[in-house]
Image (cartoon, rainbow, N blue to C red; front, side):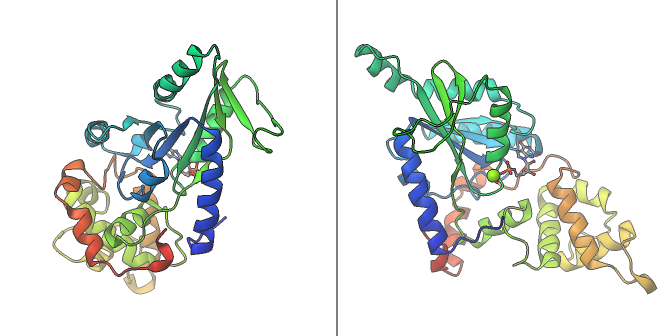
Length: 302
Ligand SMILES: Nc1nc2c(ncn2[C@@H]2O[C@H](COP(=O)(O)OP(=O)(O)O)[C@@H](O)[C@H]2O)c(=O)[nH]1
Ligand SMILES: [Mg+2]
């Protein structure tokens, strides 16, 4: 299913999210560990105001370990519990569930004083492709039972029972990325979190190689047998095609094929663990500057 973030889609997603929020005590927000800022929209802080929140830096297996650690510290310093995580490996799951329980501790405590042992209810949110379904499916696999429908209370929502006092909503809350920051949108495109039909893959792969020539030069020099990193993106892609022998008849670089392979290999972690954002860059205000320079797109604002 392809999701386009037209205002109508966004309005619907927001409505569904708000409905789910009413039923839940804790929000588990998934972001991409390789680009935690690009993969979350600052507007969400407002949506989740008054809700205890746990932020999972998902796909940490593909991100630079040290930078992910710094991101966790960055969020913690801003009052948000953040943990490295890997939904498809289930790595960090116990710590994540403990964090969810801890986040709800105040609510549970208050209810206990009134003699009620409250069941904590959590929901998963995040932008498309960040790993929500992987997270939920993994928990389904290990949950003893499904709570099933609870008519009247949850109106057809399903809950996954994680423990005697912990349940998870099995429908994730869909969030939308911010497209008004062109640099952030580009990082999402490199990560494969934006519909590809609307993009020029050769441009995308070229700009990725250019970015990696700064962030991880050795990795692309070796893998694609590049000779000269000072060329622009198109030039780097062409070098990669020659280096790896992706050629058409007459030795012409097969840029289309090369672009697809470069993107696939980056996304699949073949170039090693690479982060596209670091907390230090965020602190330098790069985000705001680029956002201001980017053309506004009203359709993508919430
Ligand atoms: N390497 C890696 N891939 C992941 C991880 N979590 C999810 N994925 C992959 O990311 C893609 C999108 O995951 P999905 O759960 O469908 O995301 P959703 O759109 O948020 O529901 C799938 O190909 C998953 O296999 C992770 O922790 N590590
Ligand atoms: Mg999904």
